[in-house]
Amino acid sequence: MASQASSTPTGTRAGWPRLYDGQRRVLLALLLHGEDSRSSLAEYVGLSRTSLTRIARELVRMGLVVEGESLEPSGRGRPAEMLHLNGNAAHFLGIKLTGDALFAVVTDLSGAVVDRRSEQLTGRGVHEVVQQVGRVAAGLLAMTTLPVAVGVGIAGDIQYRSGQSILRDSGHLGWDEVPLAELVTEATGLPTTVKNDVHALTAAHHWFGGGIARDPLVVYAIGAGIGSGVVVKGALVEGRHGRSGRVGHLRLGGEGRPCLNGHVDCVHAFVTIPSIEYNSGVERGEYAIALDRARTGEMRSLRAFRAAAYSLGAAVAESVNTVDPELLSLMGEGLAMLDLAPEEFDRGLAEFLERVTPAEVAIERPPFDFSLYARGAAVAAERKLLS
Ligand SMILES: [Zn+2]
Image 1 (cartoon, rainbow, N blue to C red):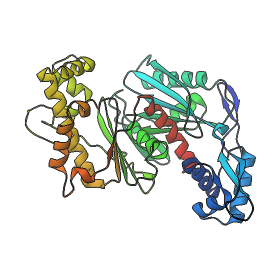
Image 2: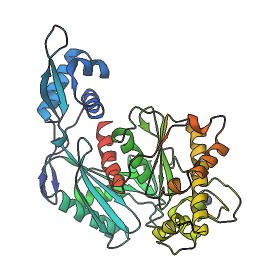
Image 3: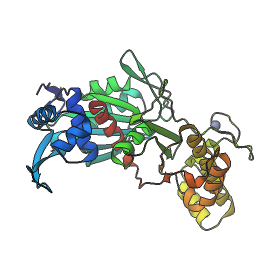
Image 4: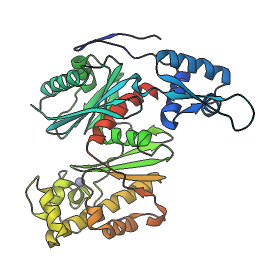
């Protein structure tokens, strides 16, 4: 195993094995499809039995794969030796940054969360936040000597220039032109990937959230903002400028309500949590109050949630028209409009769909909690190594 020891604030840690393509393909197949016998795995990844046997031996030696129970064959012949992923072979630290807080999880190789932490940001400047990320990393990783990679998820555009990733236009923290991955690597001593938070959430839902067999896959995230991610032929589509999936500024008309970009009556002006608060007549941060009022039938709040549901339906319809997904997943902490006014969501969808009926569109609402963003960031780091 060719490994590099990286010096970290917490001591010496095993480095990442350098994997070649065949090794990555076998590892990925076990990761995404579970334990398997050598013969069916060879067929699945398109390798000869001989190659597969060699690669399996190498992965076992690296500790990434373990040989398990033999499965008795149903007919005659030798029992099939099963291969399993060794989830405990590596850790990933995923960090989601919002405008005022940091959410961190540690995941293992199988995407399971093994530790977590959240803190308010102690400052909003790039240097202060990066130092805080370094402290959180040192704390959470103090006990592990496994190889670790870091993923950071943040609102904004990730652009790639000369092999370097640059964070652009990150509204919540007011950052622009920040080489965040490089800075976090300096602060932690660990390889770091930075992704748009919704793109990271999408990639994690594709691998570990039930989206693996559904292609194209579209994931919507609704909360402080609205955004979406797209997976086509197994790959996350980030786009030329890191801006794919920027739904939410479709103009709907009717109310004369401006969004932050100055558009009148765009989806954004109705669908996000701050918009619902404003349209309900409550203070910023009082989403729960607006929700309570709508649930008890208070008309102004109820109207705000109905408009949000209709707007979301319209936005979703445009994604369906563009990508024609096999599955569209609605995620995020701001989806109460679907409980309060499902018929308005369906109405928006029906009005904006082109030659497809709402019944023909597969839409799911998987279980969501906010830590999935941090997990998405961890999975983004893992995807970088394995795909
Ligand atoms: Zn707008």
